[in-house]
Image 1 (tube, rainbow, N blue to C red):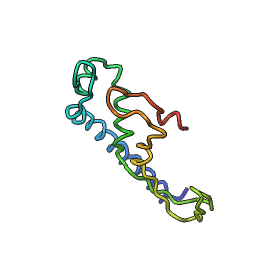
Image 2: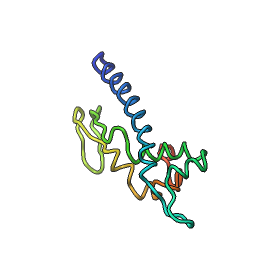
Image 3: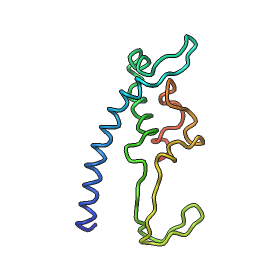
Length: 126
């Protein structure tokens, strides 16, 4: 790894930590503005989280999955490889769109709301 690569990785980690913190703080705004239908009528996400604090870790994970701090990630290809049936040459740039991948209904059938933690989690995909 070159010095420039190392500096780039450090800058990315610093920015990612900041952006992740901001995204979690946005959960408060999201919770105020979102409601789910329940048998007893609409219930805000905030009311659900106040009612059951055990839902909070799943709510944070789901929020970061659905609204990632960095919606795309650019990487340089290290060796010639095949991706999605296409040959990608070493040195080429590829972009992974996390926003799209994290909303794939085949991988994440549950939606944000009272189903926090339901469906496949990102950790299950490793």
